[in-house]
Image 1: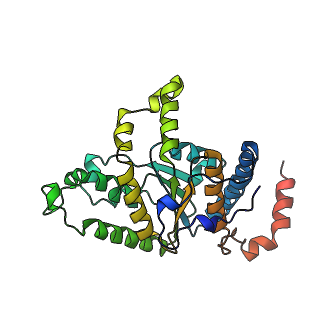
Image 2: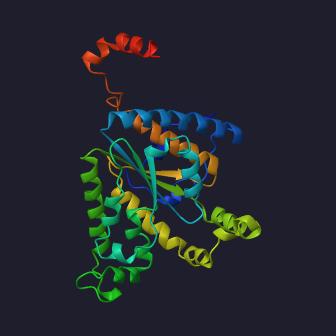
Image 3: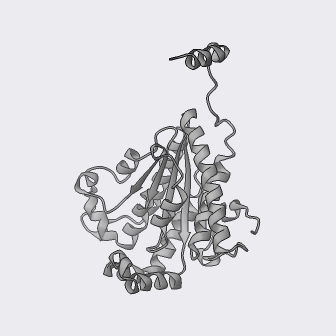
Length: 293
């Protein structure tokens, strides 16, 4: 397999999405990619156990991508070796009536990871500068002061929202949350093929919605807004990675490796040491348990 530096997929300066690959050749077979993923997720699982015991950091994994980019199956495959207590997945749908009674970040605050745990956001707080930007009429549901119609939305509204999101992420990073954001970069042709497969294979029919085709018609708008959001909000402590997503096996491996590469840099994450008194008496405790009848 080709040697991989996952920093190559990290956004450290402004990029055009159209210049970034949706497919990468890792010089590996499908089986080799699956084996590499298995090795990587086992290492992640071991690290998560250590993080749980260490109890100082939480990890927030943010996943964004166009419809059919493979977020659901990626979550299943990347985190399948985790202890169930160590990872919580949140799939953010259209805000409900309770959520709309609060600011747009409220429901995301509630879903932040506890110390020692992972939270995976399947679609994220970035929907508030993506979907709502393509469909600005959705903003009216938020009952914001001074906004009664779409024409009332100020010109600097989206810029301010992205500033708020940057500040939100800065705040949680400074309080012990490791933030990693991934855009699953899918080509329009690959999306077409995946939508066709949903229609052709009966067991996948349930995944298809006519709304998928409606949103596909906004492809250029979504790409433009993703590009702006990624370039504006990719920061050193809360970076974006643009992961080629046309090959699901390669995508899953690259994303898992990126997470492992970052977390491995935290040398302070380790199992707590036993108290000196307990350490000194281990042989006594072992003897007592061994002699128990």
